[in-house]
Length: 152
View 1 (cartoon, rainbow, N blue to C red):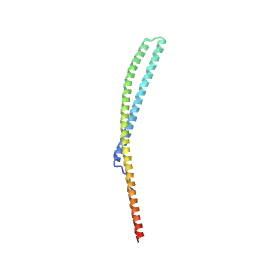
View 2: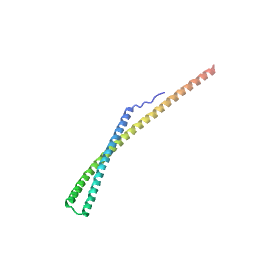
View 3: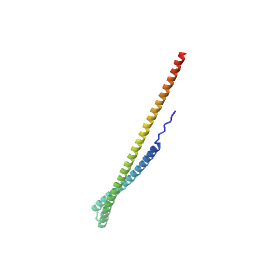
View 4: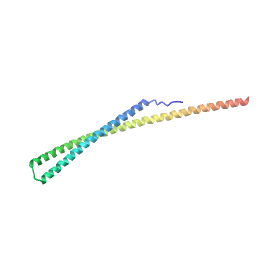
């Protein structure tokens, strides 16, 4: 029996590898984004703690130096939060780029899989046609033998 061999198997294999690489890059970009978001949340939590500490200091006996330190720390944290928001935005852009590359790789793989499936269907169709032709020839040969035997 004939064996199906896809002529562009190497191309399909390359597309599969490219998709796997794109998946890995996407996962790495997501991990970076998650880490940056966690850093941002930690800064926000720390900022909230300093705000609460500032409120507590204002309720109690006021120590000007502690209050000034608290205000400086809050201002510093606000700057760090803004910088971290930019880091998160860059990480999100990286995720978006990785997602686009992954989507393109998946589309290319699907195209080549569809081409392979079409080639296989054509192979099966040609195989069936060859078998049908062979059966027709066999039937014609046998019919010819019967006609020849009946004349004798």
